[in-house]
Length: 288
Ligand code: PXL
Image 1 (cartoon, rainbow, N blue to C red):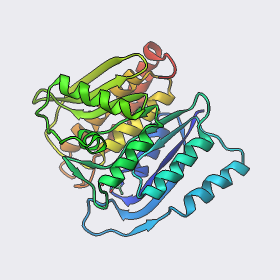
Image 2: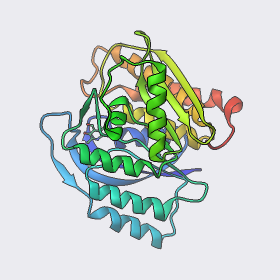
Image 3: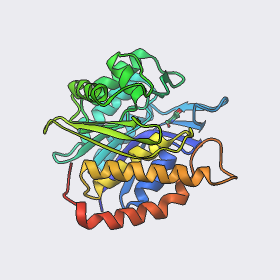
C-alpha cells in the first residue's frame, strides 16, 4: 500500500483540509500520514474560530520520524499558516522526497479574487517559491494571479489567456501545473493543465452547478493525490477529481438539510470508489 504525507491544518469542523483529505485518500486505498500545521475550531471562513499554531511542533515530528526510518511515496501540502511553516515544509521535502516520489502542492491562498484571512502578497510570493519544488501544483485563478502578480480575471478570459497563465506558472519551476475552476461556457467548469516536460496542454470540463461551497479545492486536490497514487496519469487523475467534485456538489445541492459550510463529500465516496475501480484497467500507466 502506498503511503503519503499530507501537510495541512486540522479544522475541527468545517469539511476542509485534513478532515477531507484523510477520508478521501483512505477511501482510495492509500495510507495517509499527517503533519498538522495548526488546530482550528473551524476554518477561517467562519466568523469566530480558535487557532493553535503548531509550527514549533512540525520539525520535532519530522525529526522523530527519521528515527523510525519512516518514508512516504508522496507529499501533499495544503493550507499553510506562515512563511516559517513554508521553510519547514521545504526541509520536509528535502528529507522525505524519494527519488521517484511525488510532491503535490495545493497553494491555498484565496478564492474569488481575494486572499483568505491572514494572508498577504508576501505570503503568496513565498508560496510561489515553494511551488518551484513541486511535481504538480493545483492553484485556482485567484491563487495563480497572486503568485504571478497579475490582475485577477473572473471568467472573462479565453483559452489563450489561460495557456499563458499556465506557462507563466510553470516558469516558477513546477513540473505540472493545473488551474482549477476554469470556465469558458456558462454551464461548464473544469481544469486546464500544462505539462512542462512535454510542452503539452490538457483540459477537461464537466457540468457546472451554480453554487459556492467551501472546501471543494481540498476535495479536488485530495482526489488528484489519491488517483496519482492509484497509478493514474495526471490527466486521468484530474478527470476523476473534476467528476468527483461535481458529484459532491450535485448531491449537496439536492440535500435540503445540507450544511452551509461544505459539501457532502461523504455521500459521494461510493461514486469515487466505483469510479476508481472502473478506470483502473484502461488508464493505469503508472506515474505522471
Ligand atoms: O479550504 C482551504 C482552507 C483550509 N484550512 C483553513 C482555511 C481554509 C480556507 O479558508 O481557512 C483553516
